[in-house]
Amino acid sequence: MDKPLHDLDWTLLRSFLAVADHGSYSAAGRALRLSQPTVGRHIELLEEATGLHLFDRAQRGMNLTLVGERLLPSVRAMHAAANQAQLIAAGAEDGLAGTVRITASIFVSHYALPSLISDIRRMHPEIEVELVASDQSENLLYREADIAVRMYRPRQLDVVAKRIGGIELGLFAAHSYVGRHGKPGTYDELMEHDFVGYDTNELMIEGFRAAGSNVTRDFFPVRCDMQTAYWQLVRAGCGLGFGQRTVGLADRELVEIDIGLEIPPLEVWLTAHQNLRNSPRIARVWDVLEEGLRPWCDAPPAPA
Image (cartoon, rainbow, N blue to C red; front, side, top):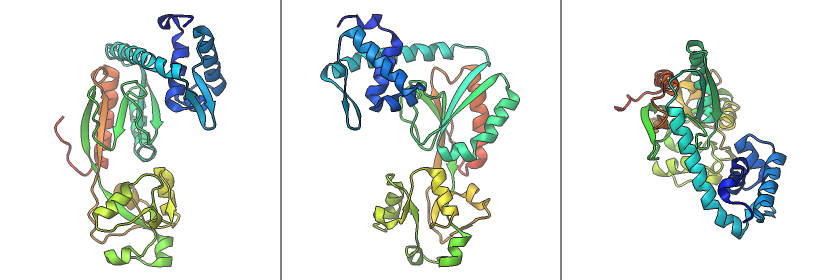
């Protein structure tokens, strides 16, 4: 190697890690909030500085070379150390002014969080808020987000998590769909209807199988994984669909299909990295989210 690893520009190494993790310059650029050409230039500069060929271009993106694979663990360790230092420094801040980055599912980001973020800005105008609406799990350890609203219990060792409650789910259909196909009154009748299903997510298939119906992906004539688009398909009359009861019951386009199905609630957890949880800025935003999300939840919260 022409230049020692610790002497290299960290910006170049960060782009190297992003391309290795995401598989292309464009995906790495989105993750880093840089342009595709900028990421490509970073890789060129890194290869020039090290004298190493790190990536091979493939049909579907960029593949690490053998020497790139050998370099990757060292760069990942540097990245982890840098993020740990950043988390410790951020946790030691004692002021409110600054940015808090919140991540949540697209559905929760659309229906629940805008009013809560408005409350945060009204009460604490010195706090800036970034909302990452994503159905992917942003990494709190790498500070891709400061606070996450999760629909499952986080298992990472270095995060603090608190269960807020459970969101009650229901089965809904558009009035237009019921007008064409009628409203099922029994489970057998229900299974004769069209459902809007998920595309690659098998959660709904598993739910039907748990209820005794051995369905496959083909059971759902319309499929979509993005929750907000899924909900609009239900509202448009494409078939029956599952969603949060607070949202469905408030929607004049929808009618609830209640035949006594037992649908497990969707758990809601607030989580943050343990080094950040008690910093004043994160603590204030956490408190607003906790109080504001409780009305969405029907189950009582567990002790912290």
